[in-house]
Structure formats: C-alpha cells, structure tokens
Length: 492
Image 1 (cartoon, rainbow, N blue to C red):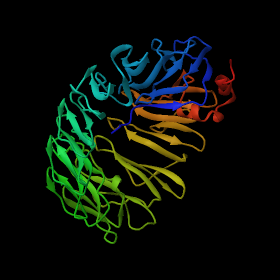
Image 2 (cartoon, helix red, strand yellow):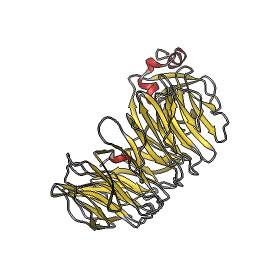
Image 3 (spheres, helix red, strand yellow):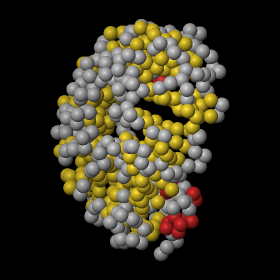
Image 4 (cartoon, rainbow, N blue to C red):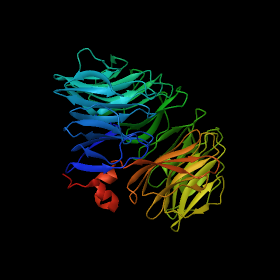
C-alpha cells in the first residue's frame, strides 16, 4: 500500500554537532548546528535542493533548506518533501500530541498522526495530498481537507493526474482494497496494484487481484481476468491503452480490449512502448527457449533474432523507424534499425535513445573494456571514462549530455565539454539554458551546485555549504580531515 516518498529518515547513532561555514546562504558564519537524533531529510526531484531537521539549543527543531533556516521551532519533524519544481517545500511537524503539515510555513489542520511516506505534490506543485489519522481511522487529505467523510482503515498510493486536476488513492477496509477517484469509491478487491494515468489526465487504469487472478480496471470498467497482468501503458495522446497478460500459460499483449498473438513462453512481455508522436505500439517477445526473440510493432513481427534485449526497443519520434539491441549469439551485441542495418558487435550496450525530433540517435557501448559513444553513425568515439549514465538529448535535439565515471571521480559532459570533477554527481538535468547538477567533494567538505551553459562555455559552480547526505552521514570515515573537524562529535 505504501508508496515511496521523496524524503527518507536516517537514525543517527549519536547527536552530531557540526560547525558550519555557509557561503551565500544567509546563515551566520561558523554557525553551530546540531542535527536531530532521528534525521529527517529530503532532496528535491531535480537533486538541486536539500532540506533537513536541525536541532536548536533548547531541544526543539527547525527546518533548514540548503543551509538556510526556513521555519519556526517545533518539537519534532516527520517528513520533508519538495514540489516537483522545487519552489515549495512541505513538512510535517509535531507540537504536543498533534501533528500538522506545513507548506512554506502555512499550517494545515491538526491530526493524531500523519504518514511520513504517503505524501504527494501535484505535478504543477500547487496541490498537496497526504495520509492522516484521527482516532482509529485514516483519511486522504487534499488541499487541507479530508476526502472521505468517514475515513478508512488504511490509506495509500496517493496519485495525481499529469494535469494536476484529478486525484486518486487506495483505501482499505478489513482485507479489501479499492481506488478512490475524485472522491468516488470504486469496487473493492483482494488487492489493488499499480496504476497509470493517460498523459492528458482524462483516463485512469489500475491492476487488481481477486481469487488469484488479475485484471485491469480502465475508466471504472473491470476487464477480463488473466493469470498475470503487467506493464499497463497509455499512448501519448491517451486514445489507446495496452498491457501484457498471461493466458493459459502463454504471453500476449492486450490493446484497447483486443488480444494480440500468443507467445509460448513463461517470459512476460515487458515493457510495452508507444511512439511519442504517433500511435505505433511496440514490444519485444520471447517465442520460446529454442525459437528466439521477436520485435513486434503494430502487430507485425519486424525483427527476429536469437536474442533481443526487451527493454532496448526504441521507436523514433518521427514515426519512421525503430532501433533495438540484438545478438546472433552470446558473443556480442549490436544495435539494429528498421532497415536491418546492423552496428558493430559490442560487449555491452546502453541505449539506444532518439532525440525528440527523431533526427538523432545515440547509444553507448563497451568493447574489450573500452567505452565508446555512438551518435548518428556506425563509428563510435572512444571515451576515456570507466562508464557513463543519464545520457540524453535536449528538448530541441541539439545537445547531448551524460554523467561520466572515472576511477575515483564523477563529472558531467555536455556536447563533449567537461565539468569539474567531483566525488559524486547527482542526476544532471537539462534547463532552458543548459544543464544543472548537484555534486559533492569530500576533499573540501562542501556540496556544490553546477551550471553548465549551452554554447561551449565552461561549467560554473557555487558552494552550497556542508549538507547532510546519505554518503556524508553513513560514511563519515570517508570525509576529509577538515570535514571530520566540522563534525566534532566530542564537542560539549
């Protein structure tokens, strides 16, 4: 029932007293900070902001975001979570016996308990939902108001539509579960599993289980029963809906209620992909242990190989082609396109990916422990790095970015230009003007925000100050001597 929240809680072995020298954060230099024993910690989706509960001299706690105090004093913090655009922060606090949620220091109603994991901002960041308990019943709280008049035994799986207008969640009464869509309670089942919205937010589907069988509820209508159901997905325009299923021991794909061909294999068909700018439906299926693999697009078998990486299938956004990773035998892998044009045989392949306009394709690969990057061609450029990840095209398809790993450091590469090196780089992301990222260096004991502009200019970095992270808290022995002094656990 519980979904994963964007914050987590770490229990520190001791109170950690830290002397910090923040730069550009608005805090007093050499400020003495004591982290709460149970550290409540949250990072924004773009990885560029971090918040934590900070203990005050009188034993209470305040919220600190990027090293700047953002709240009044409270007895205890429960969760900290950022809106998708990082402009807002929500957190649960306790004073006395009651809990409430604060959004940028604006208080919500009080409850006996507020879940630390069942909390969600809407995609536009304007709405917040969370699970709260009053007495013996739980409720979903949306925009500060309880959704169900009488509550429920349990509440979870809070989810907003992509346009932020609709809201759904799961309730449990006894041993039965149901989805609540826009305040209306749906049918109850033994289990309610994964859900998916159409991109326009007008349609909603979820998988349920009853008597050992699984089925899909689409737009409130219960579908056919199958032995298993996986990978529910809408087309990008929301007009079509597909999922993979198991029937009589065989695998198939169901699209708009119509069953596709059966494949005699125990391997589930997963994932299923729709074309970005068209209604093409593609997937990879195993035809059996001795029959090999096949790629299916719009119901037609378009590529057949002894081995195909099922998750590698990429449909070009211009509707003209596809690419996948296949092998004739286990000796190596190659990228294949719609004209059966085969790339070089490689040891391992990451990708392929298309630019959004469909004009460019890229993938990374290893051959004899050397790393290569292939962009729009059969000839790869050898890279000096141990590995790369997070590589993607900008929205206009003109720029390629990835995170690179050296033996003892990480960096960001944009159009071949390299950022400074760090001990750790958190997920880089495209902006309108370039790439932004968050990074750590143990050697100087600080967290950094990097900005990498388009046009070939070098990346610039700004010190955020020392910030508590999973690495710096759970691996203090790896910190430099300067940061060990900052921790100063023996301070009185």
